[in-house]
Image 1 (cartoon, each protein chain N blue to C red):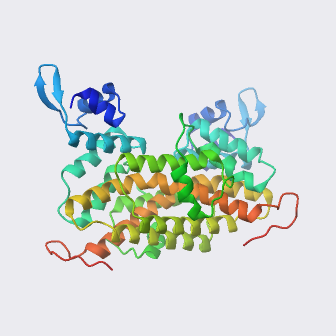
Image 2: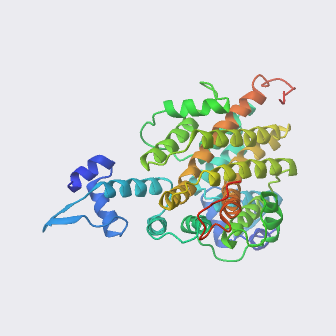
Image 3: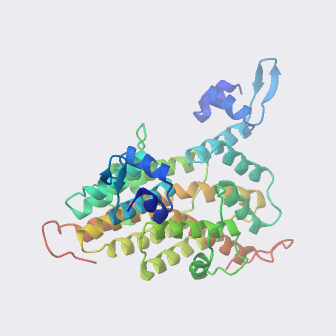
Length: 210
Length: 210
Protein backbone atom coordinates (compact mmCIF):
# COMPACT_ATOMS: atom_id res chain seq x y z
CA UNK A 1 0.00 0.00 0.00
CA UNK A 2 1.05 3.62 -0.40
CA UNK A 3 1.82 5.87 2.56
CA UNK A 4 -1.60 7.54 2.18
CA UNK A 5 -3.36 4.22 2.75
CA UNK A 6 -1.05 3.38 5.66
CA UNK A 7 -2.08 6.72 7.13
CA UNK A 8 -5.78 6.06 6.55
CA UNK A 9 -5.63 2.58 8.09
CA UNK A 10 -3.82 3.69 11.24
CA UNK A 11 -5.12 7.21 11.75
CA UNK A 12 -1.53 8.48 11.90
CA UNK A 13 -0.83 11.47 9.63
CA UNK A 14 1.59 11.12 6.71
CA UNK A 15 3.86 13.75 8.28
CA UNK A 16 4.00 11.78 11.53
CA UNK A 17 4.67 8.53 9.67
CA UNK A 18 7.61 10.20 7.95
CA UNK A 19 8.84 11.49 11.30
CA UNK A 20 8.71 7.98 12.83
CA UNK A 21 10.60 6.69 9.80
CA UNK A 22 13.31 9.33 10.17
CA UNK A 23 13.58 8.49 13.88
CA UNK A 24 14.11 4.84 13.00
CA UNK A 25 10.93 3.63 14.72
CA UNK A 26 9.27 2.45 11.51
CA UNK A 27 11.23 0.51 8.85
CA UNK A 28 11.41 1.89 5.32
CA UNK A 29 8.80 0.60 2.89
CA UNK A 30 9.92 -1.23 -0.26
CA UNK A 31 10.95 1.46 -2.72
CA UNK A 32 8.73 1.22 -5.83
CA UNK A 33 9.88 4.46 -7.47
CA UNK A 34 12.28 7.28 -6.67
CA UNK A 35 9.72 9.08 -4.55
CA UNK A 36 7.42 6.21 -3.63
CA UNK A 37 7.54 3.29 -1.22
CA UNK A 38 5.17 0.40 -0.59
CA UNK A 39 4.10 -0.67 2.87
CA UNK A 40 2.52 -3.88 4.14
CA UNK A 41 0.52 -5.19 7.10
CA UNK A 42 3.67 -5.41 9.21
CA UNK A 43 3.96 -1.62 8.94
CA UNK A 44 0.33 -1.21 9.99
CA UNK A 45 0.88 -3.39 13.03
CA UNK A 46 4.15 -1.67 13.93
CA UNK A 47 2.59 1.77 13.59
CA UNK A 48 -0.27 0.79 15.93
CA UNK A 49 2.23 -0.31 18.55
CA UNK A 50 4.22 2.92 18.18
CA UNK A 51 1.09 5.00 18.54
CA UNK A 52 -0.06 3.07 21.61
CA UNK A 53 3.31 3.50 23.30
CA UNK A 54 3.45 7.23 22.58
CA UNK A 55 -0.13 7.69 23.78
CA UNK A 56 0.76 5.84 26.97
CA UNK A 57 3.32 8.54 27.64
CA UNK A 58 6.51 6.94 26.28
CA UNK A 59 9.03 9.29 24.69
CA UNK A 60 10.49 8.64 21.23
CA UNK A 61 13.64 7.25 22.85
CA UNK A 62 11.67 4.98 25.19
CA UNK A 63 9.51 3.81 22.30
CA UNK A 64 12.64 2.96 20.33
CA UNK A 65 13.99 0.90 23.24
CA UNK A 66 10.69 -0.99 23.59
CA UNK A 67 10.64 -1.72 19.85
CA UNK A 68 14.28 -2.89 19.98
CA UNK A 69 13.28 -5.29 22.75
CA UNK A 70 10.42 -6.58 20.60
CA UNK A 71 12.82 -7.04 17.67
CA UNK A 72 15.67 -8.59 19.60
CA UNK A 73 14.15 -10.31 22.64
CA UNK A 74 16.41 -11.70 25.38
CA UNK A 75 16.85 -15.49 25.30
CA UNK A 76 15.38 -16.24 28.73
CA UNK A 77 11.70 -15.52 29.40
CA UNK A 78 12.37 -14.18 32.88
CA UNK A 79 14.63 -11.52 31.36
CA UNK A 80 11.85 -10.17 29.15
CA UNK A 81 10.20 -8.22 31.93
CA UNK A 82 13.50 -6.73 32.98
CA UNK A 83 14.09 -5.55 29.42
CA UNK A 84 10.56 -4.15 29.15
CA UNK A 85 10.84 -2.36 32.47
CA UNK A 86 14.27 -1.01 31.62
CA UNK A 87 12.87 0.43 28.39
CA UNK A 88 10.17 2.43 30.13
CA UNK A 89 11.87 3.37 33.38
CA UNK A 90 13.51 6.78 33.27
CA UNK A 91 17.08 6.60 34.49
CA UNK A 92 17.65 8.64 37.61
CA UNK A 93 20.72 10.13 39.10
CA UNK A 94 21.69 9.41 42.66
CA UNK A 95 21.23 6.37 44.84
CA UNK A 96 18.01 5.61 46.60
CA UNK A 97 18.11 3.99 50.03
CA UNK A 98 16.85 0.48 49.26
CA UNK A 99 16.44 -0.87 52.78
CA UNK A 100 12.85 0.33 53.36
CA UNK A 101 11.89 -0.81 49.86
CA UNK A 102 13.43 -4.23 50.47
CA UNK A 103 11.49 -4.68 53.70
CA UNK A 104 8.28 -3.68 51.95
CA UNK A 105 8.59 -5.89 48.87
CA UNK A 106 9.34 -8.89 51.06
CA UNK A 107 5.54 -8.92 51.24
CA UNK A 108 5.50 -9.60 47.49
CA UNK A 109 7.66 -12.69 47.84
CA UNK A 110 10.71 -10.67 46.85
CA UNK A 111 14.11 -12.04 47.83
CA UNK A 112 17.56 -10.57 47.15
CA UNK A 113 18.29 -10.93 43.45
CA UNK A 114 14.74 -11.75 42.40
CA UNK A 115 14.23 -8.45 40.58
CA UNK A 116 16.38 -5.87 38.85
CA UNK A 117 17.90 -3.25 41.19
CA UNK A 118 16.45 -0.27 39.29
CA UNK A 119 12.94 -1.71 39.65
CA UNK A 120 13.51 -1.92 43.37
CA UNK A 121 14.84 1.62 43.41
CA UNK A 122 11.54 2.73 41.79
CA UNK A 123 9.81 1.53 44.97
CA UNK A 124 12.44 3.26 47.09
CA UNK A 125 11.91 6.57 45.30
CA UNK A 126 8.12 6.29 45.64
CA UNK A 127 8.50 5.70 49.37
CA UNK A 128 10.87 8.65 49.70
CA UNK A 129 8.38 10.90 47.92
CA UNK A 130 5.61 9.88 50.33
CA UNK A 131 7.96 10.40 53.22
CA UNK A 132 9.01 13.89 52.10
CA UNK A 133 5.37 14.88 51.73
CA UNK A 134 4.79 13.55 55.27
CA UNK A 135 2.16 11.24 53.89
CA UNK A 136 1.58 8.17 56.06
CA UNK A 137 0.28 4.90 54.68
CA UNK A 138 -1.02 2.69 57.48
CA UNK A 139 0.31 -0.86 57.77
CA UNK A 140 -3.19 -2.17 57.07
CA UNK A 141 -3.53 -0.19 53.84
CA UNK A 142 -0.01 -1.14 52.72
CA UNK A 143 -0.90 -4.81 53.29
CA UNK A 144 -3.94 -4.36 51.03
CA UNK A 145 -1.75 -2.75 48.34
CA UNK A 146 0.76 -5.61 48.47
CA UNK A 147 -1.93 -8.29 48.38
CA UNK A 148 -3.79 -6.67 45.47
CA UNK A 149 -0.63 -6.05 43.44
CA UNK A 150 0.53 -9.60 44.02
CA UNK A 151 -2.79 -10.95 42.72
CA UNK A 152 -2.45 -8.76 39.63
CA UNK A 153 1.14 -9.75 38.87
CA UNK A 154 0.52 -13.48 39.34
CA UNK A 155 -2.49 -13.43 37.01
CA UNK A 156 -0.50 -11.45 34.44
CA UNK A 157 2.48 -13.78 34.48
CA UNK A 158 0.29 -16.91 34.50
CA UNK A 159 -1.28 -15.54 31.31
CA UNK A 160 1.99 -15.06 29.42
CA UNK A 161 1.58 -17.06 26.19
CA UNK A 162 3.79 -20.16 25.75
CA UNK A 163 4.74 -19.17 22.20
CA UNK A 164 7.97 -17.14 22.56
CA UNK A 165 7.10 -14.43 19.99
CA UNK A 166 3.69 -13.94 21.51
CA UNK A 167 5.24 -13.90 24.98
CA UNK A 168 7.57 -11.05 24.02
CA UNK A 169 4.75 -8.95 22.69
CA UNK A 170 2.50 -9.68 25.67
CA UNK A 171 5.11 -8.92 28.29
CA UNK A 172 6.65 -5.83 26.73
CA UNK A 173 3.42 -4.15 25.67
CA UNK A 174 1.36 -5.31 28.66
CA UNK A 175 3.87 -3.90 31.05
CA UNK A 176 3.52 -0.43 29.47
CA UNK A 177 -0.03 -0.28 28.15
CA UNK A 178 -1.82 -1.64 31.22
CA UNK A 179 -0.52 1.08 33.55
CA UNK A 180 -2.93 3.81 32.39
CA UNK A 181 -5.82 1.33 32.62
CA UNK A 182 -5.02 0.41 36.23
CA UNK A 183 -4.65 4.05 37.29
CA UNK A 184 -7.89 5.03 35.55
CA UNK A 185 -9.75 2.10 37.12
CA UNK A 186 -8.43 3.09 40.55
CA UNK A 187 -9.88 6.58 40.16
CA UNK A 188 -13.28 5.22 39.20
CA UNK A 189 -13.18 2.74 42.06
CA UNK A 190 -12.18 5.46 44.54
CA UNK A 191 -15.07 7.66 43.48
CA UNK A 192 -17.52 4.77 43.68
CA UNK A 193 -16.21 3.78 47.14
CA UNK A 194 -16.34 7.43 48.22
CA UNK A 195 -20.00 7.70 47.25
CA UNK A 196 -20.66 4.40 49.08
CA UNK A 197 -19.03 5.74 52.22
CA UNK A 198 -20.02 9.39 52.25
CA UNK A 199 -23.32 9.62 50.39
CA UNK A 200 -25.90 11.11 52.69
CA UNK A 201 -23.22 12.14 55.17
CA UNK A 202 -23.22 15.78 54.07
CA UNK A 203 -24.48 17.91 56.94
CA UNK A 204 -24.55 14.93 59.20
CA UNK A 205 -22.11 14.21 61.99
CA UNK A 206 -22.11 10.48 61.35
CA UNK A 207 -20.41 8.76 58.49
CA UNK A 208 -21.23 5.20 57.65
CA UNK A 209 -18.16 3.10 57.03
CA UNK A 210 -19.15 -0.09 55.29
CA UNK B 1 13.53 31.43 59.54
CA UNK B 2 15.40 32.91 56.58
CA UNK B 3 15.10 31.51 53.06
CA UNK B 4 18.50 29.83 53.44
CA UNK B 5 17.23 27.81 56.41
CA UNK B 6 14.00 26.99 54.56
CA UNK B 7 16.18 25.66 51.76
CA UNK B 8 18.35 23.62 54.11
CA UNK B 9 15.34 22.09 55.88
CA UNK B 10 13.58 21.04 52.68
CA UNK B 11 16.46 20.32 50.34
CA UNK B 12 14.94 22.71 47.79
CA UNK B 13 17.41 25.28 46.41
CA UNK B 14 16.88 28.98 47.11
CA UNK B 15 16.49 29.64 43.38
CA UNK B 16 13.73 27.01 43.14
CA UNK B 17 11.99 28.39 46.24
CA UNK B 18 11.96 31.82 44.60
CA UNK B 19 10.59 30.28 41.41
CA UNK B 20 7.75 28.55 43.31
CA UNK B 21 7.00 31.87 45.02
CA UNK B 22 6.83 33.71 41.70
CA UNK B 23 4.56 30.98 40.32
CA UNK B 24 2.22 31.47 43.28
CA UNK B 25 2.73 27.96 44.67
CA UNK B 26 4.38 29.13 47.88
CA UNK B 27 3.02 32.11 49.84
CA UNK B 28 5.31 35.06 50.53
CA UNK B 29 7.11 35.03 53.84
CA UNK B 30 6.56 37.86 56.33
CA UNK B 31 8.71 40.76 55.13
CA UNK B 32 11.28 41.61 57.81
CA UNK B 33 13.35 44.02 55.74
CA UNK B 34 13.34 45.40 52.19
CA UNK B 35 15.23 42.37 50.87
CA UNK B 36 14.41 39.82 53.53
CA UNK B 37 11.42 37.66 54.45
CA UNK B 38 10.77 35.27 57.31
CA UNK B 39 9.29 31.82 56.84
CA UNK B 40 7.68 29.41 59.27
CA UNK B 41 6.82 25.72 59.59
CA UNK B 42 3.79 26.14 57.32
CA UNK B 43 6.18 27.05 54.52
CA UNK B 44 8.32 23.98 55.22
CA UNK B 45 5.27 21.75 55.08
CA UNK B 46 3.94 23.43 51.93
CA UNK B 47 7.28 23.16 50.20
CA UNK B 48 7.46 19.43 50.97
CA UNK B 49 4.05 18.92 49.39
CA UNK B 50 5.04 20.92 46.29
CA UNK B 51 8.23 18.93 45.90
CA UNK B 52 6.40 15.62 46.29
CA UNK B 53 3.83 16.59 43.67
CA UNK B 54 6.46 17.73 41.18
CA UNK B 55 8.51 14.59 41.76
CA UNK B 56 5.38 12.52 41.14
CA UNK B 57 5.25 14.05 37.68
CA UNK B 58 2.75 16.90 38.22
CA UNK B 59 3.37 20.06 36.18
CA UNK B 60 3.49 23.51 37.80
CA UNK B 61 -0.10 24.13 36.68
CA UNK B 62 -1.32 20.77 38.04
CA UNK B 63 0.52 21.38 41.30
CA UNK B 64 -1.17 24.76 41.60
CA UNK B 65 -4.59 23.17 41.11
CA UNK B 66 -3.89 20.50 43.72
CA UNK B 67 -2.74 23.18 46.19
CA UNK B 68 -5.84 25.26 45.47
CA UNK B 69 -7.95 22.21 46.30
CA UNK B 70 -6.06 21.78 49.56
CA UNK B 71 -6.61 25.47 50.38
CA UNK B 72 -10.27 25.65 49.37
CA UNK B 73 -11.72 22.16 49.72
CA UNK B 74 -15.22 21.39 48.44
CA UNK B 75 -17.88 21.22 51.15
CA UNK B 76 -18.93 17.62 50.59
CA UNK B 77 -16.46 14.81 51.24
CA UNK B 78 -17.51 12.85 48.17
CA UNK B 79 -16.53 15.81 45.99
CA UNK B 80 -12.98 15.82 47.28
CA UNK B 81 -11.85 12.95 45.12
CA UNK B 82 -13.39 14.51 42.06
CA UNK B 83 -11.49 17.73 42.74
CA UNK B 84 -8.26 15.83 43.34
CA UNK B 85 -8.67 13.78 40.19
CA UNK B 86 -9.60 16.83 38.14
CA UNK B 87 -6.41 18.53 39.29
CA UNK B 88 -4.15 15.77 38.06
CA UNK B 89 -6.01 14.57 34.99
CA UNK B 90 -4.78 16.17 31.78
CA UNK B 91 -7.65 17.58 29.79
CA UNK B 92 -8.05 15.88 26.43
CA UNK B 93 -9.62 16.98 23.23
CA UNK B 94 -12.24 14.81 21.56
CA UNK B 95 -14.85 12.49 22.94
CA UNK B 96 -14.06 8.97 23.98
CA UNK B 97 -16.62 6.23 23.40
CA UNK B 98 -17.79 5.52 26.94
CA UNK B 99 -19.90 2.41 26.36
CA UNK B 100 -17.09 -0.18 26.67
CA UNK B 101 -15.73 1.67 29.72
CA UNK B 102 -19.19 1.72 31.32
CA UNK B 103 -19.63 -2.02 30.84
CA UNK B 104 -16.20 -2.64 32.34
CA UNK B 105 -16.54 -0.46 35.42
CA UNK B 106 -19.87 -2.02 36.24
CA UNK B 107 -17.57 -4.63 37.79
CA UNK B 108 -16.38 -1.96 40.24
CA UNK B 109 -19.90 -1.26 41.45
CA UNK B 110 -20.10 1.76 39.15
CA UNK B 111 -23.55 3.03 38.23
CA UNK B 112 -24.47 5.98 35.99
CA UNK B 113 -23.60 9.17 37.86
CA UNK B 114 -21.45 7.55 40.51
CA UNK B 115 -18.23 9.05 39.18
CA UNK B 116 -17.16 12.11 37.20
CA UNK B 117 -17.42 11.70 33.42
CA UNK B 118 -13.78 12.60 32.76
CA UNK B 119 -12.64 9.86 35.14
CA UNK B 120 -14.72 7.39 33.15
CA UNK B 121 -13.27 8.74 29.92
CA UNK B 122 -9.81 7.98 31.32
CA UNK B 123 -10.82 4.32 31.35
CA UNK B 124 -12.26 4.66 27.85
CA UNK B 125 -9.00 6.12 26.51
CA UNK B 126 -6.94 3.39 28.17
CA UNK B 127 -9.16 0.75 26.54
CA UNK B 128 -8.87 2.46 23.15
CA UNK B 129 -5.10 2.50 23.43
CA UNK B 130 -5.04 -1.24 24.15
CA UNK B 131 -7.41 -1.81 21.27
CA UNK B 132 -5.34 0.19 18.81
CA UNK B 133 -2.24 -1.76 19.79
CA UNK B 134 -4.24 -4.96 19.23
CA UNK B 135 -3.50 -5.96 22.80
CA UNK B 136 -6.04 -8.39 24.21
CA UNK B 137 -6.75 -8.65 27.93
CA UNK B 138 -8.54 -11.92 28.72
CA UNK B 139 -11.80 -11.78 30.66
CA UNK B 140 -10.16 -13.71 33.48
CA UNK B 141 -7.29 -11.24 33.77
CA UNK B 142 -9.64 -8.26 33.57
CA UNK B 143 -11.70 -9.77 36.40
CA UNK B 144 -8.53 -9.98 38.51
CA UNK B 145 -7.74 -6.32 37.74
CA UNK B 146 -11.23 -5.20 38.76
CA UNK B 147 -11.24 -7.24 41.95
CA UNK B 148 -7.76 -6.05 43.00
CA UNK B 149 -8.48 -2.40 42.24
CA UNK B 150 -11.78 -2.57 44.12
CA UNK B 151 -9.98 -3.93 47.19
CA UNK B 152 -7.47 -1.09 46.96
CA UNK B 153 -10.06 1.66 46.59
CA UNK B 154 -12.27 0.38 49.40
CA UNK B 155 -9.34 0.18 51.81
CA UNK B 156 -8.24 3.67 50.79
CA UNK B 157 -11.65 5.24 51.26
CA UNK B 158 -12.29 3.35 54.51
CA UNK B 159 -9.07 4.93 55.79
CA UNK B 160 -10.03 8.54 55.00
CA UNK B 161 -9.70 10.40 58.34
CA UNK B 162 -12.90 11.72 59.91
CA UNK B 163 -11.36 15.16 60.57
CA UNK B 164 -12.21 17.27 57.50
CA UNK B 165 -8.83 19.00 57.14
CA UNK B 166 -6.99 15.71 57.47
CA UNK B 167 -9.43 14.13 55.00
CA UNK B 168 -8.64 16.75 52.36
CA UNK B 169 -4.93 16.24 52.69
CA UNK B 170 -5.26 12.46 52.67
CA UNK B 171 -7.53 12.28 49.65
CA UNK B 172 -5.84 14.86 47.47
CA UNK B 173 -2.25 13.81 48.14
CA UNK B 174 -2.96 10.09 48.37
CA UNK B 175 -4.65 10.12 45.02
CA UNK B 176 -1.52 11.56 43.36
CA UNK B 177 1.37 10.27 45.43
CA UNK B 178 0.33 6.62 45.65
CA UNK B 179 0.28 6.10 41.87
CA UNK B 180 4.07 5.80 41.46
CA UNK B 181 4.18 3.41 44.42
CA UNK B 182 1.54 1.08 42.94
CA UNK B 183 3.21 1.06 39.51
CA UNK B 184 6.63 0.39 41.04
CA UNK B 185 5.24 -2.40 43.23
CA UNK B 186 3.60 -3.98 40.18
CA UNK B 187 6.94 -4.12 38.38
CA UNK B 188 8.62 -5.80 41.33
CA UNK B 189 5.73 -8.25 41.69
CA UNK B 190 5.80 -9.06 37.97
CA UNK B 191 9.49 -9.83 38.06
CA UNK B 192 9.09 -11.97 41.19
CA UNK B 193 6.14 -13.85 39.61
CA UNK B 194 8.13 -14.22 36.39
CA UNK B 195 11.03 -15.85 38.23
CA UNK B 196 8.53 -18.10 40.06
CA UNK B 197 7.04 -19.21 36.76
CA UNK B 198 10.00 -19.34 34.43
CA UNK B 199 13.03 -20.07 36.64
CA UNK B 200 14.66 -23.24 35.44
CA UNK B 201 12.58 -23.18 32.27
CA UNK B 202 15.43 -21.86 30.12
CA UNK B 203 16.36 -24.53 27.63
CA UNK B 204 13.50 -26.71 28.76
CA UNK B 205 10.29 -27.32 26.82
CA UNK B 206 8.12 -27.37 29.91
CA UNK B 207 7.14 -24.34 31.93
CA UNK B 208 5.70 -24.72 35.37
CA UNK B 209 2.61 -22.58 35.90
CA UNK B 210 1.87 -22.36 39.59
